[in-house]
Amino acid sequence: RIAYVNGRYVAHADAAVHIEDRGYQLGDGIYEVCEIAHGQVVDMTRHLDRLERSLRELSMRAPMSRKALSVVLREVINRNRVRDGMVYLQVTRGVAPRDHAFPSDSVQPALVVTAKRMDRAAGSRRADTGVKVITVPDNRWDRVDIKTTGLLPNVMAKQKAKEAGAYEAWFVDAKGEVTEGASTNAWIVTKDGMLVTRAAEHGILRGVTRTTVLDVAKQLGLKVEERGFSVEEAKAAREAFLTSATSLVTPIVAIDGTTVANGHPGSVALSLRQAFFDVAE
Ligand code: PDD
Image 1 (cartoon, rainbow, N blue to C red):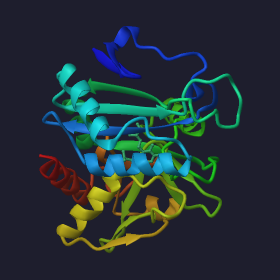
Image 2: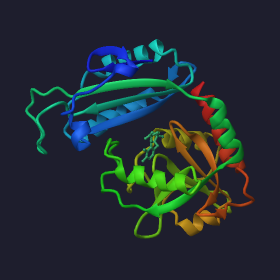
Image 3: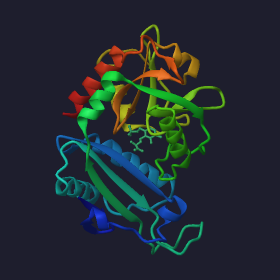
Image 4: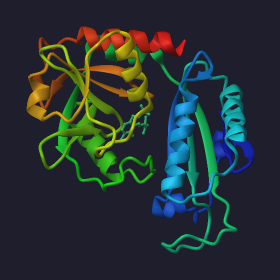
């Protein structure tokens, strides 16, 4: 495997950053994960738009132009011969002696890009059976709209899910409403067929998959509401599912041990998953 690290393509096994990289010491970095289908980055424009927004919100410089970045992505994907999988890119504020405040302008932001193949069959099997989620209090900061590498609450939540035999943990806010998953957006289909996901302006990351699924849902003529929903509403829903660049659309069949509907993946989730593949082709 080959990785890109600060201007060089190096063997993945030897790829390393400096111990005073601010991403490593302070979580002072941002990232993107994009799906690769048929050797192409899915929704590249939306991912690069979100990357630029994250940089802007944190007053971080771009490591290179958007055009140059897309060349590096292409190169890493090709060098690793990935047809189906994911590409990871991370920008940190660079290497400087440890100090919370920003380093001087001469410090270059650091860029790392990796790509890996993913087993489509495993994802399909998960979608066929559906996954379980648990809920945890949302104890994150109020800038979860920025895709930062500072992911400790997400790490703790996902570990708790794993220990409970679940695939994902849903964060729940002080009002008892689901915000999003540790690394996915959360959705339900209500008893009267309404597709519901939380508005992107309120305490969630604006998932690229979320945006694309909203587009697809509207094309399919589904009724959509962007609003919060409680854990109780989700447990009583006709369907629940999650979305992300790596999980795509994955049906949920249990929430905190309560079976959703008949315990089988819902038809809306499955048709959105299929429609999403068709868009990505
Ligand atoms: N996670 N919410 C959070 C907190 C996320 O970390 C992610 C993505 C999403 C879904 O966004 P998208 O559809 O753009 O992937 C929502 C990536 C996959 C990760 O951290 O690995």
